[in-house]
Image 1 (cartoon, rainbow over the protein chains, first blue to last red):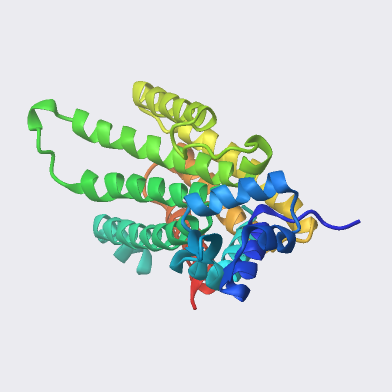
Image 2: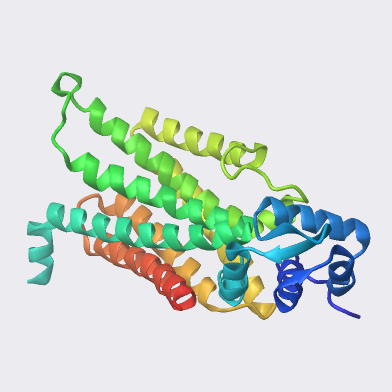
Length: 89
Length: 222
């Protein structure tokens, strides 16, 4: 059985997809995230609210791009997970 | 020889002891807060709160409590109030540490406020009740009982986590905390005066905080 992805892992996967493309269209990001449209919408809302990603417009089309905070999250993702596992929290 | 020196300088040593623990707590709070703000992970938030409360507890008991009574008209009341605050903060810190271990199984979905939510509110009320009871009966009985029980439960949880493949490090930290509380209680109820047992309790308590600091720095250094 495939292990269910933890919330932080899903966020990391979404941010990694955004980072790898620079700017990415919502539909492309939905496919890359491997989430249902409903869950995807929920996560994007969270990421926008926490300013990990931002919405930009290029030639009147909506794209997502990574913010500095999102980049820092990716840089510290391993530290965060390691911390959580070590302290059992 | 060393024992006599410790006894002769015990008030000064207590202040140094509290300053070191406050410093350790401040570092842990800053580092966990940084990780929490990036990840929004609730467990980090509760762990951070644990050390905020430990900081406040030691600051009031050993630093503010050592300042000469600024309101002499109220005699011992000032020091009793400081003790009351110490108990409330230290008991709540223990509860936050406990909650940081179990929050996943009691919080579903939405993020809660880290202090003002129903579950934490209940723990705040228990901490307040413990501090009030000890204040009323001029004892530390309820504080010791609550902390020994909570550390025992945390010991069982972290041992179970260790058996499930998690790091043994956390289990050792909790065992240190548990031993420190038991020794403190034993020294208070059976020995009263500053004793080798109480000094050992202080040393083990310091090890408990140093373990947390070591774990935090080791993981969060870049």
